[in-house]
Image 1 (cartoon, rainbow, N blue to C red):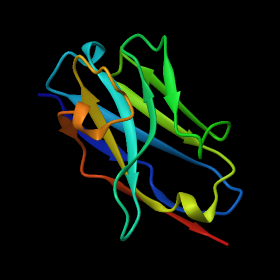
Image 2 (cartoon, helix red, strand yellow; image 1 turned 180 degrees about the vertical axis):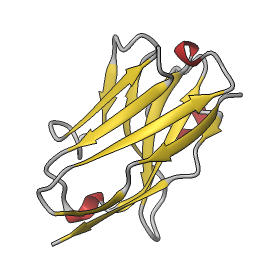
Image 3 (cartoon, rainbow, N blue to C red; image 1 turned 60 degrees about the vertical axis):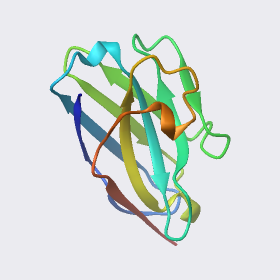
Image 4 (cartoon, rainbow, N blue to C red; image 1 turned 90 degrees about the horizontal axis):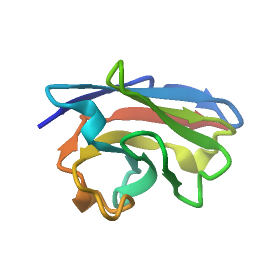
Length: 124
């Protein structure tokens, strides 16, 4: 299985931007659907965005559509999440996930590999 390490979290003001990165190793990265999920305190893990193996398709939660952009670089084994116009409700731990043969990109159960998460804090 592929191993994932997120970075780029931190503190941003509401309306600001952050860019999350996820480095993959130990697998053939281009075979994997890649996703970003987040979990806020007291809430269940929720889907944020996903990108197909060749970047041909992207998927977004309604709550982030138009503000967040997912991208990947198969040559560098990286996936990114550009987050603009941050809101207080975006504050959470963000997780990178990888899955093979994913049929439902918004479902956490479709992803077998997960990173350790990176904290995103948004201040007013």
